[in-house]
Length: 194
Image (cartoon, rainbow, N blue to C red; front, side, top):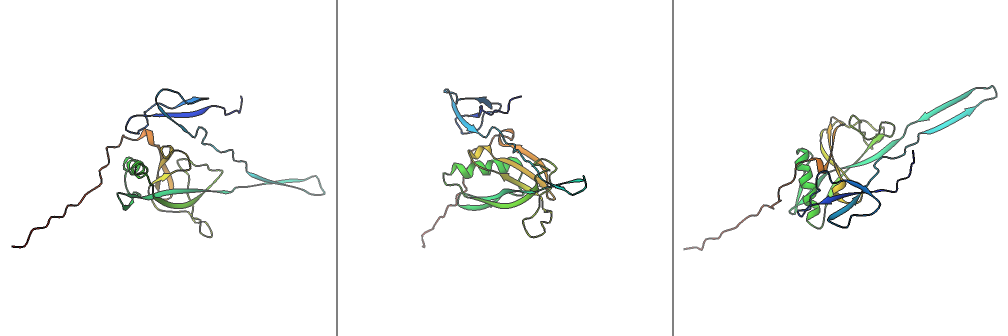
């Protein structure tokens, strides 16, 4: 089997800027008809554990494999309509809509925290996350978060944590379509004095 990765992944967007469900294709070039964007095609890393081999005078070989931590940033807040919004306790569908709206504003502002996981465990449902503080204790909080690296913000994933363990991973395209976002407005009325 060839290990070449010469195909690129593309998804199609509708007129509202939403991904068309089932539109993911692998091709060498972007299609000419429609609104297509390239996304990350290969999300897996090629992790190779560190191996140390020691040979002594007698014909004995000892092999030790060490595991390493990988870092991940989970985003849990952003600025919507000029207001800082924490979405960590919202549903995955609500988090998706908040995330998309933050980027639709034209000047995205969002934040989060860095956490660790063992490279050998991978980044999957069931993976325990750890603090970056000395001793790397496991995290114990729960909530809904965004994982985003680079490229189109629409390639982000929504993660649900339950007591520090990844309990669900959602692709944005697999979550319900967002309704148009309307910023709340306040109206001030003044009544003239008699």
